[in-house]
Image (tube, rainbow, N blue to C red):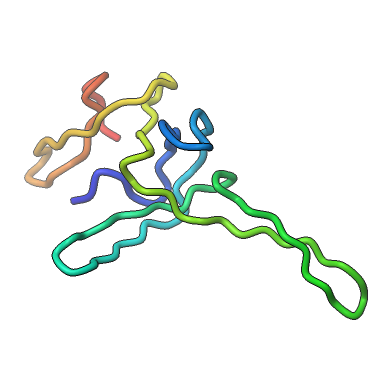
Amino acid sequence: MKRIVSGDQVKVISGNEAGKVGVVRKVLYSSVGRRKEVYVIVSDVNVRRFVKKTQAGKKFDAKSYPIAVSNVALLAGDGFVSKVGFKLKDGTKKRIFKRTAEFV
């Protein structure tokens, strides 16, 4: 089970976008040799805007770029960041906030 999944509300904790809050739209996994890397695409964070020329004129477009999962933290219900732990509930593994001990 993964610590951060799509649909989670996260806060960026480092980099140029530090302090911004958004919802995870997609989780990307890549492996280069033995190294495995995990990236997330967060809505309204790390967005680059550019202009495309068309016959009708200029068209403004925006694209979201991925952020390393180590640079984001999960937001608990009280609005503070929290680490994620795991507990068994009814025989299945569930995610919990370590800060509040509530289920995600």
